[in-house]
Image (cartoon, rainbow, N blue to C red; front, top):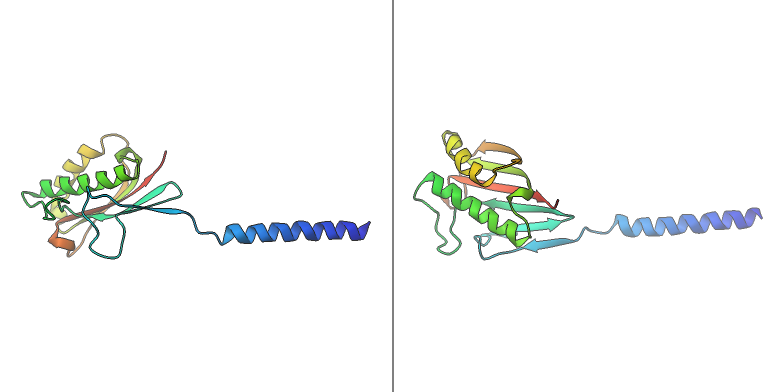
Length: 154
């Protein structure tokens, strides 16, 4: 009887260990999000990566995806283009700005903080996400602003 009990315990432990090993080593499924409605990456990275219900969007600058030129009419126009690019990537994942839980804004000049807030507020009208804004010395394409986001399926 004791042998049978110990044998049963061993089988249960081996089964548990085998299935734990399979799930512990399994990589989460990720989906690459790519749209021609936002600028294509200029390096080895994706516009967005969807994993476990979270979308991680690479930093976007104010480059118009059709002309491939920086929106240079004004700081506000550049910021608006950044947010349009983010919106396109979110849409490619079946999301919108309501799904965004975190943003990071990079500014070359912190003196533009009020202007970025003005444009940003037009896109995040209710329950804005957590955010930080940092000043940097330079950005790709000689941009003045770059924004990255993390979004979550509700």
